[in-house]
Length: 91
Image (cartoon, rainbow, N blue to C red; front, side, top):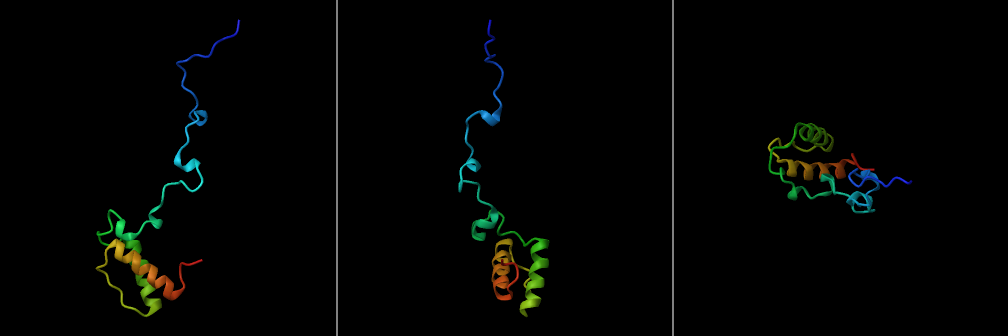
């Protein structure tokens, strides 16, 4: 006599047939690097230590003044500007 599968045993989630956004090309979750800094939830907070350090380096290389009062969003925009000017950080 053949055994019938137990209906109470959960299926392996990998074969459930449920598709997640990341399963579809181009449908993954957008990263913060793709979101406009003006839309960041924490964009108005003071820039991070890493942003400040990198921004100081870029300012020195570009011969521009460093503004320590920038927000996270403003620092991100400034980093983009200075990377363009200095050629750093671009592939």
